[in-house]
Length: 496
Image (cartoon, rainbow, N blue to C red; front, top):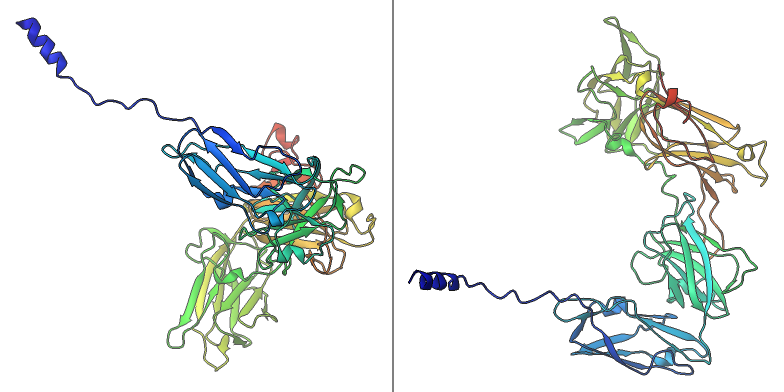
C-alpha cells in the first residue's frame, strides 16, 4: 500500500513540454533561377527557393545591385520563395552586376538571417575584377571622420553636376581609418567623389552635407598613380572659425548673472560668477562680456571696476568697447591679477536701448583664478611651417581648439609657441596652409573645382590639468601627461 502511494505521488509531478531547442539555423538556398555566375546574360527576374518559410526585412535597404541602377531592384517573398525584379533596360553592355542580399532574407519564425550571399552575372563575356583604393578625411581637421560617408564613382563622361542629379555607378563605405576599396570594377575611367550622405539618397544635396572630389580621372587597376586622397568639406562658411556668441549662456561651467528692467523687458547677461567670492572662478585671460537682448547705446562713465586690497577698494584701469559687428554686446577689458577679489559695477546709466530706456544697475563681486588653476603648453613646430622655412610660398596658421572653441589661431612666425595661461581642458592642434591669405581655413567649391585648404593634423589631443607644464612636438604624439620619473620622460611637469 505504501509503495502504491509513493508511485501515485511521483506521477503527480507533471511539467509542461519544453518545446525542444530553439531554431538558430538560417534558411538554406536550395534552388536558383537563373543560375549564378552566367556570362552574356541580362537578368530581369531572379528566383530563389529556400528550405523553409521565409520573410523579407527591409528589402529596399538590404538588397542592392552594383553597379547601382537609378531604379533599385524590387523583391517579394511568398512562402519559401523570393522573386527579385531588375529593370533590365537599365543594364549596360559588357558589365558585371552583383546583387547583394545583406540580411534581408530571414526565416519566418525565429528571424535567423540568410547572409553573405551575392548573385553575380555579366552582360559581357567576362567578369570585371579590378580594384581601386584610396583614403578620405575631413578637410577641416586633416583626420578621418567617416560617419555617414560614402565614396562613389561616376562615368568619366559625366560632369560634377552628376553627383547632385543622380545616383552613382558604384559606392562603398570607408573603414574607420578612412581607407576605402572598390572591387569588381571594369577597366574604365571614372570620376571619384565622397559625400556625407545625411538623407541616404546617395547624392550630394548641399546644405549640411559635405563633399569631396578628386582632381583627376581615375582608372581601376592603374598602379602607376598614387592612391587618391579625398578631403571632405562643407560648401558653407566654416562654422569652426565663426565667432560664436557664447556669452549669452556663459562659458561652460560658469554661472552667469542676468539683470532685467521688468517694465521694459530689457535685460542682459554677464559672464561672471558672483555666488561665492571664496571660489576662484573668473579667467584672468578673459574679458567681461555684457550681452543684451536688444541693440543698445553705450554711455560713458557707467562702469566701475575695483580690486580689494586689504579691505580697501582700489580702482583698476579698464576699457569699454561696444562690439562693432554686434550692437547687442559690450566688452570690458582689464589686466587682472590672479587670486584677487574684484568688484564690477554697472550703473543704470551704463547703456540704454534705442528708445532711451535705461537698464537696471547691478554690482558683482568675484574672485579670479590663480596661477595654479592654469596649465602651460610649449609647442615645438617644424621649421618648414614658419615664415622663414616654408616651401610652398604662403603662410601657415596654427590653430588650437578646446572642444568646439577656437582658443588660438595665428600665423606661424617661429618654431616654438608657448601658451602660459590655459584653463584645464583637452586641446587639439592643427596647421592650416593659408593659400588665400585670409588667416583662417577656407573651404572648397565643388562646381568651381576649388579644393579646400590643406590642414595638417597635430599630435593626439592633450589633456591639460591645472598646474601642469607640457612640452610637445607638433608632429609627434605626446606621451601620457602626468608625473613620471620627475616628469622628464614625457616632457610634462607639475608646477611647484
